[in-house]
Amino acid sequence: MITKTQPVSLMIMGKEYRIACDLEEQDDLIHSARQLDVQMRKMRDSGKITGPDRIAVMAALNLAHELQLMKTQNAALNQRLSECLTKLSRKIENVLENP
Image: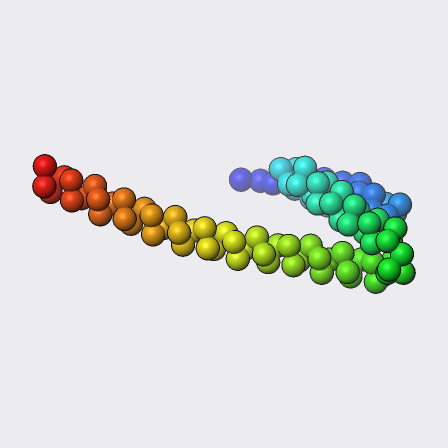
């Protein structure tokens, strides 16, 4: 399978960034850039953090933290789902063995 890349223009904090991206990933990249832009503008507008570099680092840290929380929650949900499926499988086996 051949993937085609195409440059995508993204605006973050008033600056344009052109990023080469696979066509099937463009929508996700655009959404991610918008999310980053919103985070950075909130931090800038709060007045607590100054300087574009510090704003970018803090926004990246916040997004990375959210991602880590989601990964942890996902792992816990996968574990619970696996346990439920195992119990369900045992119940089905019991019913089939003892009609």
